[in-house]
Image (tube, rainbow, N blue to C red; front, top):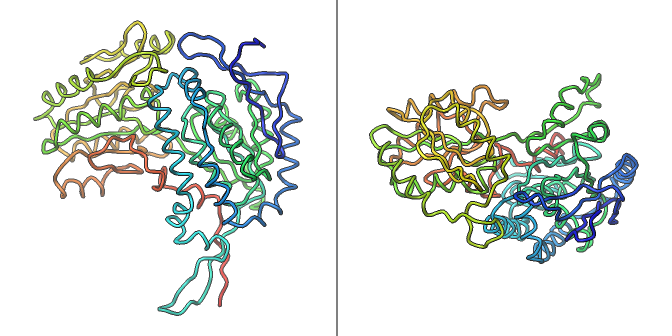
Length: 474
């Protein structure tokens, strides 16, 4: 391994950091320069993590919620204190520093307010220990008891979303279930920093972090899938999804796996003629370009009412001109440089489009690109990680709803992750809410506007990880 690497990231197994002679190199997204490395986990590492996770199950369940909240508050104060690591993430992922820094700040806020998040989901954080009261009138007649669904949770992280780990992992820890994380090798730093912060704050039991390439070591993923009762999948790791597809149907209910997948987004915007068009254009561009259009909530297709279509396109072009382009580490850059391979892949897909309104691909980046498209365009139907907006003119809201629903009818969930409605008409908004096949509707905001207190893909992860099928009749 090169001696000039900035960072060497270890695993965490049974409360201790563990390095490995086998490394996964992390390179600069644009230049290909080696920047850091991750300890590649072996079969023995995974087996040890599984063994110690089972052994810590009882101890984990004895930890009080108040103790977890106290530790998480400490984590909020110490998580990512070194700015040079933000620069590293920007270089490794290609995500602009401005975006990385904002994501870390939002993650800290979520960690700081985690106790209020539990209150939001369950009514009171205390109900996780005492049970949630059931009333008949004013009389308490029972308690609904929360308990973990299984002995181990396996968390598979894919992609390079910086705020993903700080959003998911505290929720799993709060279930007080041993956790084995297969960290993303596309962006492992934020996950490592979070687990290190939890360990430094005193919570070392039952939290294990391992790294391997699921493409090169599918047997490790298969082993973890087999051993863990509950699996949470975040991101599009086709290797993991294919493994799950080949898993044999268990014979008994007790052996069945509880799999919680979070799929890609295919997020949408609908711009109606009565909207504030300048505001809508600004928010659509933000939804399309934030983190290179790589987020699952990034806007991919925009249905625009015909009577304002030309005006809206001109406003979009005006907004594109305001975006700062440059190296991802520069503080005010909105769109960082992109490697040649990514530029060529998007350019190849653009050749299939009849009318490119604005081509943002240059010799060093992929800026926001506007395509006059129909509903069969690949940019309308698929989750392409690039800031390309498929603009589709429509006569009415009803047509926009019909097309938006049709565009996700082939998806696994048959829904988009997020849909923004730009309108000032409450009746039209109500119609959209009732009729759209989408998990979340935003009103006059970019689809990338993430509030961690709201469900993701219609779910609170922590609720999915807990069973509430036991009731005490008082």
